[in-house]
Image (tube, rainbow, N blue to C red; front, side, top):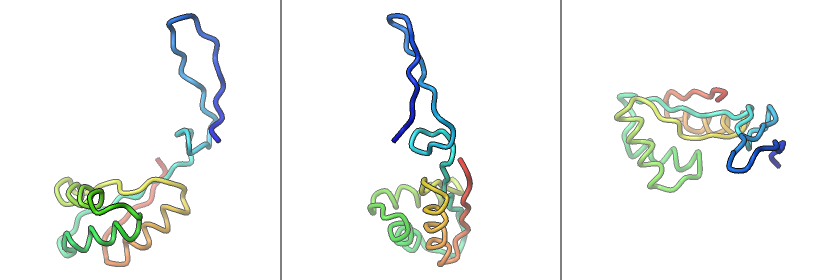
Length: 104
């Protein structure tokens, strides 16, 4: 559950909530990402299928991410805990794709 602290503000003013560090649910650190890089040897169909298998996403999302990988050279395909991202990256790497897991 996110831990936010309310801050008093005057009417019509919106205060940004303070986020506790280390809370991935609120972007307060601890969030990891999986980036997949383009290569010249995997087919588009292979990439779509492995993204669906690794992340559990639908075909449409996998197609969009594959387009980004192919046309932009890379794409962030997953976000989560370090353990989750490492697991996803391991599955994707099985077909020889360069994958990187980094802290966001």
